Length: 216
Image (cartoon, rainbow, N blue to C red; front, side, top):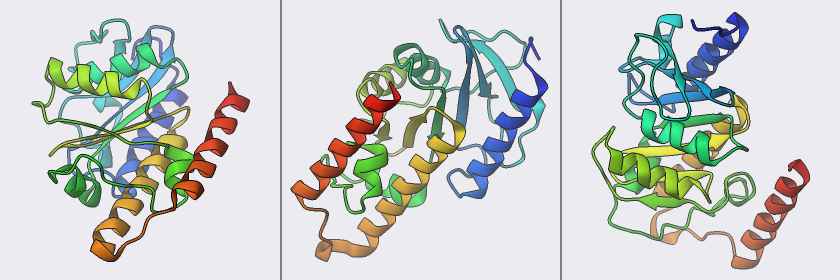
């Protein structure tokens, strides 16, 4: 693999396995990328299963234009992976996942789902963006997700799935897991569910902002 340390590839593969173990993807439904340096990234290969990923399913690509640096074809969603890494220097990992409850809510004809039903969402994830459905791998989808991710750490794609980011593998996987937990609570709670109050949610959002400023 093009000038990529073996231990980095192993960590990437293990993170993909952990993503599948957490139930965040099924078969080839998800993909992950990792910033290597200013213009190189690792990304899962096209149609690879994160559950049993090996080095054969890992590609090295350029962040500048998403072009592969090897013969293996990268994930069809390379467009928004590279786009997010270009516009978010604070991000090292991009995770596209597809969980049952999160995707069920993304498939509803409702634009303003209140995901702030547990403290973890406003504190760790913040506001959640939603983009309309576009064909997987399309330029429209890549542009919409990249644009939404400029100011959000979680994006839901109608009838498709979710995208989140982090400064590490654990950070991205945690975001995805907490988000699916909130979505499961929303679906189980139904019409009787009460979310966090505006004051409580804003307090947690403010704490999140202070945390990010401290890490800047």
